[in-house]
Image (tube, rainbow, N blue to C red):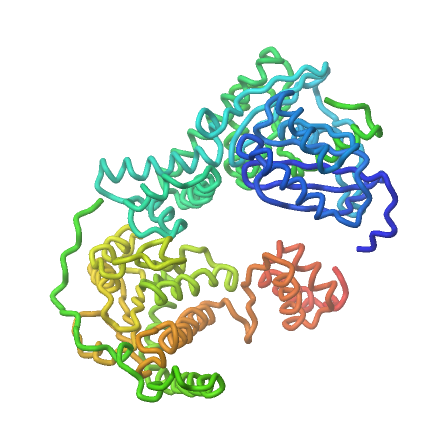
Length: 631
């Protein structure tokens, strides 16, 4: 971007909520110059120093542009003039001498849906023509905002305003993502106490939090922040889509609560029967259209004849409109029983992974060059050792393919390095193959904390492994791969025993060939003989590398066999960033021979679903239309 062509004045709009802060910079002609997104911007949850740092981050993001002629800042939690004065005082330290309009995020959201629109082709802000309605008189507008938190804001045609809610997640936030997530947690443990069963919704929550059993929710909840709990709302919506009764009940209550409070806000300014426009804003309402329709239906029942419209764009555009007005271009505006041990015995003889490697006895005396050569020569042994286990790996891949096609799942279970590698492989599947995160899951002894640090004694708790698969709802359609370099980890053995009890297909991946002689451990034991580690007992070395190689084969080849790959191209990747979108364009071009612009246009039309874009262009090409020119 060539900043030298930009002429002042420019205007800056900032909108902050419980999850993120968005800033937009535009010039006097209405051209969007740059967008910035930073961390949370809830006024109630930030100290003055933290807010100052957040605003300085915004200023730094727009370095090289002229200083704004006016700034508008709308923050969640900024309820009135005392808070607005503090915002202006802090903003004056960042943009001294610049006009600042401070307000709450409700005014910015309402301004975003008011008289301003964005023309996507020119990226200019324009005044929209007056909407054509059947109402003979001016309309009272009511904003229903449900994101991390919730609040309601109304404005009458004569300029009077009213608000409802906005008391934060302790006192309010009804119908918000936080309340939905919190109700889900409470409902799951309630039905566990009452019925002795852990629900499907509960399984989703444990998976998303990387926890192994319900009891681990207690310490998690004690330290979880508002955004952490609000993030669980995604699992509630996903469970409701699968017709989970608990999730559906939670969302029914949330939609009724939002409509009830929205109507209460409207009544502060309008009489029953007068025309009212309800505007839906916030991530909960804008990203969940089925839920938004339920709220609209509730509103129509409570205020007959009302209009219900979603906010067409993020509310930071409202902050930009307010900044423009403040700058003078517009007038200023205001638990279950433990599973018993199985009959088989875990061998206590020394595992090869614990033996000393005779080639590295003088590791501490070797030169760095010789030590590098030693480690590489040891790693060279891995492919041959893994190749000898290929028939078993092939069988397991076949079982995974069958499981996926039948609606089952693949779950890795491990401790320490083995558990982390399972989580790593599972976490890469959604972006690589566009599969839901519950399809391939990782379970680690010690749960979430163990991903980042060792949790003492976690791998020795056999019953915890059994409970972990129990509470993930493991059943006969699933494949469970226990990963244990030594082959002896009690947590993994407990998980395998529990999984087999529930009919799942079980696999033990280890590097102790003696485990092949242990009956009842798992239906398949993959145990390459890779010998001792260069550093005695450090299974993050050869064992870790070999584990990664085998897990790569399991998921990659299973996804190939389920149609996620064409030729050697990832036709189901999720292009969630610039690099991946560029890769998506290249994939479509490789498959169709289309030029860059045609491939990109097809991807944009298909919401960046690579396979759909490929199929669109293939059909177009088959019909005789040129695939090398934009449609």
